[in-house]
Length: 265
Ligand code: PEP
Ligand code: MN
Image (cartoon, rainbow, N blue to C red; front, side, top):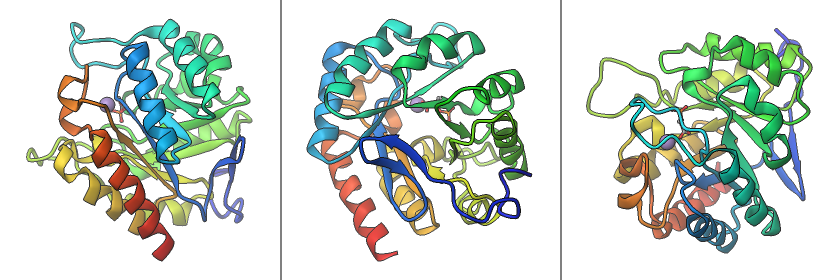
């Protein structure tokens, strides 16, 4: 496989511009709400990122919701608004693309296209992202194996887009005490098998706010090149995933811990 270490031994470095990288040997911190909700909310999260030296912000404008009646996101207008505020502050945007028709309209406003767990094996979407000159982060499927994640990455890479990032976000198991089972094993295994950077998502991985920090740090110790986690000014009021979202004080503490642990790794 082209994404394998056998094919390319040198770790792939993703250069997002303005000195922002996702690469082996650096620690990428990405935070933000599950959903982009309003201009006011965007400004608050952007300020939080700037205050804490966080250069990449996550947030969904097209949301894959289990219930069709749940908030589905602000759409492309939300993304445009977000981009205008974030780019002024030097913050890079990570956001989910749900279908091929969105790729082009999103293009001027995203820095990393996120492929969500539910679309991890949407091979048409992966094919189209293979033709794009912009970074893509692929999340592991809800019940996806490590091999399946690598094969999904292979679709994009073989299409010509080598700006790829892998993300472990937990898998569905028989365990019901947590939202998903964060597969920490996947981190060293992916790092050994592939030259691509690996990011850990403890928010979706465990789904319980109080335990997100320790799972984030466990992911760092397991060898992750970055952490993506959810934060919001008032998590209880978030439109989605509030139960696993950190408030800004918790997020500031976690970002500092991540860097401290990474420096000692
Ligand atoms: C998200 O990042 O908010 C999300 C929907 O993640 P996942 O695709 O991993 O469920
Ligand atoms: Mn979420």
